[in-house]
Image 1 (cartoon, rainbow, N blue to C red):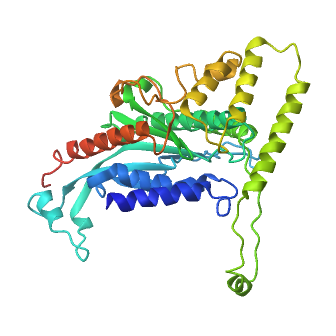
Image 2 (image 1 turned 180 degrees about the vertical axis):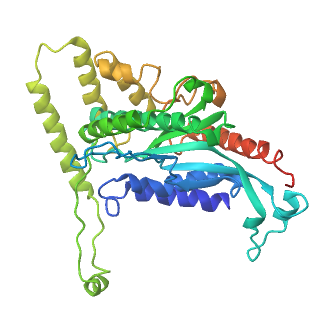
Image 3 (image 1 turned 90 degrees about the horizontal axis):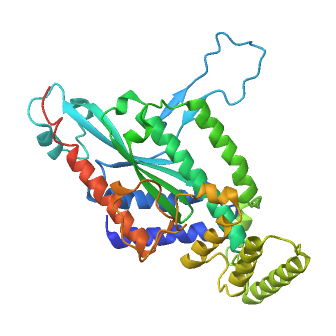
Length: 385
């Protein structure tokens, strides 16, 4: 695919993600277009052998109701592990056909798809992706923004880790030794190159996985609630007649100024009411939040340095936050620091934003890994049977 065309699509998909008019509720599915294109980009020249797949059912286990009371209601009984996206890669051998597999594949045409002439011998999943809905576009300050982003990112990371554990516990994937995990919240993302050895001696527990996912959903709702908005429905003919009269969604500069003034006044009222005996670190954090908000130029846009400083200050006065991000010296992956090889990471990367130089660098590294993975897994089964 043409790189410029693909990048153009990513720009449009990101703009759609931020659209107040067409994405009012910020649901997770609104992130699918941009991450579908990112996965196509990661496959590179091996797109086809590397297959981006949405909603792949990695594992399913139904409860055995034989010994259960038929009058008893069982809630959430079935266990399903369904990553939002993954990348598949297959290996195969020829059946009922003589000659090398490569020769057969070289002659494939749109009118000649010899799927019955080959048999899949191995399937790999080199990449698992877990997505969460974007952070609100109307956060009143960096504190609300980071509470939403931190909660959703850690939830996505935890769920992706559970999916990796499940993958390595399935006999069909016994040949796979590593998987790249990608967790994303809207345009923000992080990754981890996870070896099978991380889960040695621990068989995947489906019931615990479902419990943890449901438990985190409650926290997601508290710290990043959906924006309820029921779409207006009209007669299609009337809509067609109104096509030139529909106003653009969004705020005028005067409305933005009025909202900022109201938010500033609200912050000043909250500051006046603040308990004077709050701990020193909490006061320092609140002062930083207020100062950051006063100099903010665009709603929901905070520089990496401000995000990292916020995380450090909050860790000093919030035990839960410190525990959640204890492995991260900086919340954001450093733009200026030394680059770390994929396989050398002991934990999740810092958070990155699509379009940054750091994001571009690590997406390129993941793409190189996937392409090498595809090359390494084509030769062994290239024989006749």
